[in-house]
Each structure stands twice: as C-alpha cells, then as structure tokens.
Image (cartoon, rainbow, N blue to C red; front, side):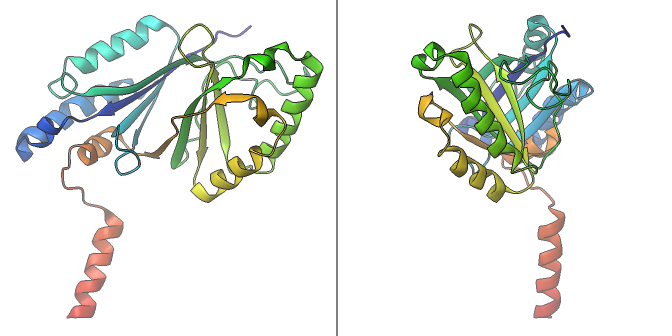
Length: 248
C-alpha cells in the first residue's frame, strides 16, 4: 500500500491589536510570514483567504505532509515570525488520506476516493467542513452502506466541475472526516450540496459544520488582505480607470 499522507487544515485569525499596527510594520510582518509559507509551497501547501466569508477566521493554510513531525516543524517555524506569534488558530483539523472502502477494485488507483496522497486541482474556491456520521451508520450491513455510497458518488459525478478531497480523521482528531471541495464556480457546489441532501446516506450524517468558503490566493496576498493592507486588484483598477475615463 502506498504511503498515506497526513492532511492539515489550519485557519488563522488576525487579532485586532495587529490590525492597529502601522502600515509598514504590518507589511514587514506579512512579508516575513509569507516567505516562510512560500518555502514549503514546493510540497503540498496552498493558502486561501476567508476574509469577508466568516467572522471567526481570516485565512486557511492547507497542507499535506508525510509525517506529523513535518507538520509540527512547519507550525513552529511560522510561530517564530513576528506575525505568526500573534495569530490565533481559530480552527484546526487533522486527517489522513486513505482509499474509500466503498469503491470496487477495478477503479483507477488515482481516481477520487482511491488516493493515498493529496492532489489538489487548484480550483479558485475551496469549501471545507469536518464531518461526523451517526454511530448507527457503522452498524448497518456493509452492502447496504456501499449501495448508499454508490448513489452518493453518482450524484457527485453529475458535477464534474467540482472535485472532492476526502481525508479520514478516526482517532486523529475530533471529527471522522474532513472533506474539501474545489471548484471555480460556487453555484455548482451549492447545487451539488442541495442534491446530496436528498441522498440516502445523508440521513446518517450527525454533523458537518462549521463550513468554510475559502478563496485561493498566494500567501502574501492572503496575508495582506487579512491585515487590511491595500491590495492592487487588476480588476478593480481596471474598473476605476473606466470610471475615470467616462467621468472625464
């Protein structure tokens, strides 16, 4: 069996005192932490902004590692920066990749539900939530559970623009799974979730909150946004120029 990767979801919150720092201090602090995040981006590490999406966090660091030691080392390095020492970890989810027990052996080893290593698609948006099943689910006969999951997978296949990344947390963290959906259009994910609510397997879900809507950004841009620093947005700048021309 291929080595399973650990997957970590770390949501940061910028405290109010940091937002009160002078612009130059916030800029320097953002650059320092961004450099540390960029160093590990060669592996599997992506950053996302949650500013304006939730009130309890500002940013997500989504990373995969082969050992728990590597996850701890990365966290320690970030804490050693001026900004990292002051960030609050609003939410933290640990999980591990493994093949789904409900897929037939004829399936391709790299397909969804068969992966032992994280393979992000790089979608513009990421929707993340921890999930816990009702205990009665595990008392059902395997074939009955498999039939319901086949229906679940079939619904997902009707939305090829949405890629699911499922990781398992049994014994590693409070939840049982952490699921992360990548796509470029939020409406597609909304429609998928609405349809999944009608599936047979849905009745056995105990909890699947909190739900996080995350926007993919490079580390420096996500940090600048979280710190309230001015960001030159090409689209916004273009609209501003158009307004200027029209007004003139």
